[in-house]
Image (tube, rainbow, N blue to C red; front, side, top):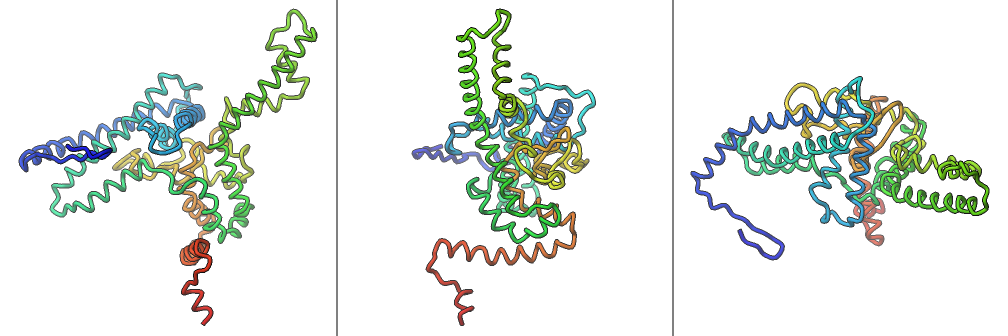
Length: 394
């Protein structure tokens, strides 16, 4: 092992025989690791099944948000911060895939939360390290083993399970304006809204999930300052009864100034689910929200019997539908999965409702992929002449 500045380089000094012995032990451990992952997934599902999904996802979002405050770069994030994101997207996928118990609890205790968080952390830790090492050792036995293919397969699985965010959030809305605008008419036909309305809703969701906590804190402090100021004036004026408590006086001040809706709005975002409630954050039609949402237990593929049942290596339900429907309300708790998969999600929902549009979508996608790169280059190099432009002048 040698260190060069911030870089550490290691090289194995095992002999060929020693390496073979290690590989043999890893191959023997491979079935055990798979069974351990199966057991962990089953424990996660059993725990999620009896916990309230709204409280679970709200707590997951708050923990994730708090862990990311004042961290300007990804370099400052730690392993625990990644687990915090998995407590939203993977847990939401579990909620969408397992039918809740009829006797589900109404609250999530600290002990239950820590138990679930520990299980999720254990799952991804084992999947990202032990499983991958043992799998490669197992595959190495094959006569057609290819080192380059194995490395590609390993990286693909790690990216699939752990990496989110294909673009900076600042670039998301312009990107979707470019790639979705050709489908404006079919969106209006099926859902009654155009691309501009959809983009406005996406911006509202983005603002609520990124700036919403800060705005809520500002409103809360302002509300507190204003109400306490009025309460102080009332006390100093002597317009109170001896039996009046501070709570009673404060409620009276709020009622007299007609601040009830203001209070409900703030506490709906602070203690409730208003930051995530799509019918409060946006004006998206219910038909679209339905197509983009899973209800608890509605997805039947993620936990279908077979290899990788419930594993993060399967297609996550949140990749297919980013929203969750709970008690007849629609919520979005995770932003990156929404943006990463929006294009394909919208394509599939439109084609599902209008199958004959599949060919049209593909044709427009082909035209877009040929036209858009030229337009982007022209915006960067305004005086450049493309071959396409020169041919049109010939």
